[in-house]
Image (cartoon, rainbow, N blue to C red):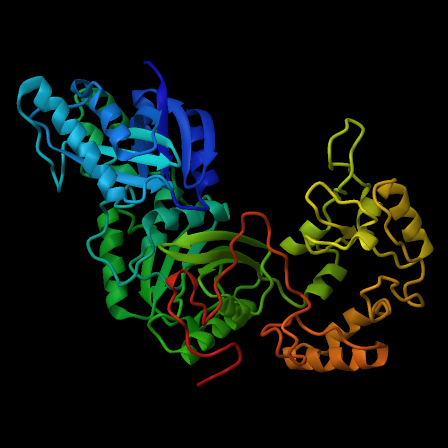
Length: 575
């Protein structure tokens, strides 16, 4: 069969998961984009992308790509497409549009012009025009505009692929089936142990986990796809894909779903039975406060409440209970939790080893992994266990200085493992005074200053920095203050900051310790807004992690960006 370009759309953060699924199905020329994966394949691949993938929401077949700056240009090009290849004059059709362009401000108007172009094509050809089908049309046309690039595609899926077809009812605000499957695939679970969802709701995560464990494709529940109404639909080929169960396997463990709400348990039980996985999925009414240590190895993947329908005090107490019960009753296992608010993650009390930025509907969320082990982190490391958090692994990566390598390219000069940990980079502001930079700037106009605690470290740093820039290296920073012109204090004695952080865990205690420290070392530098100390920044924390490229941190309560509802109360407050 002849190959052609295909586009599979997904949720932000699941692009790589979808790409891996498509590669396993035999897709070629994979290209990962934002909320989509482009690839090439034949008609069989198009059917499989709809029937077999768990993280795709739409599968599109592009038929025309061109450039345009206004709706009239789009109209002329669409009218000249040979629509007789894809539909008849008596076919019903529907047009939807996705616009990311300053030239096209009204997506519905663009869709309206595309509709006119298709109707006028048939009017000129036959004297008649097809009808627009609002529900269950024969042909779905998708128009995507990115700046001046226009892509006309046929929607081969129809209704969103998250609508599997196995649900008989839903609870309020259920997790999307595509997102649920994405969470499971991101965790790496493949049926090797028991899986527990202590906040199962309508049972979506439990059912998706069962389908993954049995390797049953989600398309078996679907009643209809849009491509089944296409003129070139191959019914025999699709029946062969539908009836092929050679990939299915046995599952020797168990999946447990718990919920405190009786109605949710009834709904989840009905959905599990309808999906045909009741033999391996157990749904029970149980409060998480009564969570017990599982007898066999297990993993938790769950989507707890975000606090939108219960009071602030209750939601904080719930997440504190999650942390306590995991520590007490889930030792030796891993827990994966997705939620919307940073404050709720903080109440769990663990440091995550892995995190992913995702969207649950319109809510920016994070999906975090917690490794639950007995005792303190320090004690486990003393026993020889190699336990590292994501931040520590990132910190131990070899440093890439902003200098040219032997090939004349910027960066990527590797350090040895023994020397890499000496480097601590502090990015300055974009605008740096010339007397500090000596008139030099790095490729991205940012300055890196390095500190050395002794002469041995200074020698290593000087050897690797080479001749780029004129950085100041202090061999004895305990005794030498900074001679930068804008500095009003000396260096903090080595080890004192770590000692203070251990002695003072609360934010208020750290502020008092910081004021006491600066009172002995010189005048403290005022916050940017020139307010008194403690008022300039609402959330002073020494251990704040820098944001990684492309990462969107979880929201904080009380934020109003993105249309989020302000959440009452602050961290630590109870009203």
